[in-house]
Length: 350
Image (cartoon, rainbow, N blue to C red; front, side):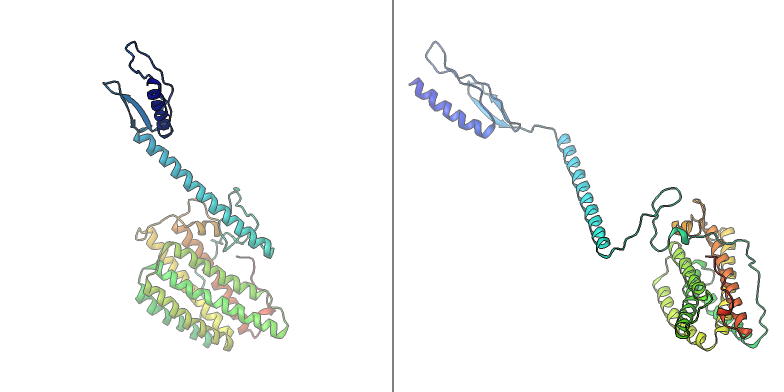
């Protein structure tokens, strides 16, 4: 009888060990002929053996680690998961770029700064950067003597009236509007000279490049100012309107009279110098905060790492003075009855 009981108990205990973890052993003893069970259990991490007062036993579930340890393990797993996702995205991006480059055979070589750090800009390269000529004469002015000179001067003065009324002394927004207009003449002039060179099978004397460089330089002024000023929606709408009107008007004007077109641009640049000078006065007087210079300006003009807004406005003003001289010079060439290609373009500033 004892053997039957022991066999049944052992079978049940073995089945129980499969669910909870383990059973070490079973023995029979006792002088009174009663069955006595002794065993040792090695439970799984989620179980525990607990004896009862009457000689029986029961299994209870328990946590193998504290809540803090479990939370820490969860954080580690989450961080590891995030790293795995980032690494996967990086590998996919590298693979995609490699596929595009290998297919077309066009890729960007690794470009670094002088200190060895990676070059961050795609819109311009290190060899396109320069230091503005701060020694340029800011006070030069072309006296309007000829009839077309007077027309150009009066047109620019009339254009300044609505600008002063709308922007007043908000020179940041004023500069944004100014640069969206100032970047148009160089593009129009360069484009028309390019088409003329193709039609007549003639060189341009470097003027195509000079005017397109001017347009690009003015555009970089705008990209810099956008880092400092965020135009409101109605100012953006005004930019679209003014650009549409000014581009078409200047296109027709350049076809009809290049000398008048360049003279107008020369006077516009004089007004730009005046506006940026007033901008600097407000910075010096504390009316406008002299914030750190944007990174794009530091790299484009090769400014010191600790450059401020005042330094940026100073180099932009110097650029405008250079554009003033170039356009007045171009107009003088036309007034002398010559073509631009007959005089070498003033290249090498930008």
